[in-house]
Image 1 (cartoon, one colour):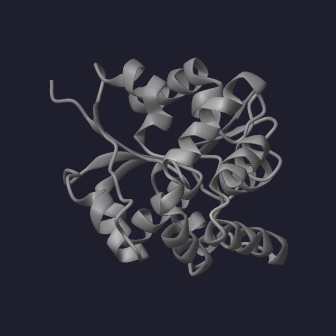
Image 2 (cartoon, one colour):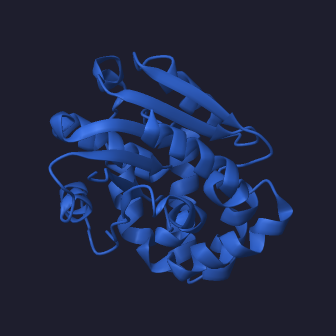
Length: 225
């Protein structure tokens, strides 16, 4: 029997290693695609790289910025997505406070404060202490993606209007200690018609790394649903 393809889209300053546990747990059940879109400097370029090797029909999952990108794919190519999974993301635009934080990150990058940026983001995004060093290393590894990703994120459009029109079955997950994205993810699940919300206990924003077995289990259920 032909396997389905699951397209996994990582988030801000991440790469496919954020899905390491899920790759190990799912690779025998589904064809996995983890696109590298670090070279893109605008949304259309990013989406082109993400979809470059994707089949005509696929399952779609995105974390954080990747969740927003998944919504942009649904907006443009709804017929290609068979099911949707969004992890710790949002459809709304940043408020003034968040925009100011993004600008501060960009200015810190321009001042070459790379270590400080990675440290602060890891502290903010990670609930379980034992994973903070790994998350910091991940952010530091991808730190030079920051300017392009910043520009794309601050220029994005609100995707809230498409949520009630999503026809696919959807699963939305957020960490119980993700103070920034928990409520936003929950709100999306209440707007998408065929959506299920799953709270990932004892996790912050980096749920695929902080609770790898649990996230893998729910992704497997999502695939088989």
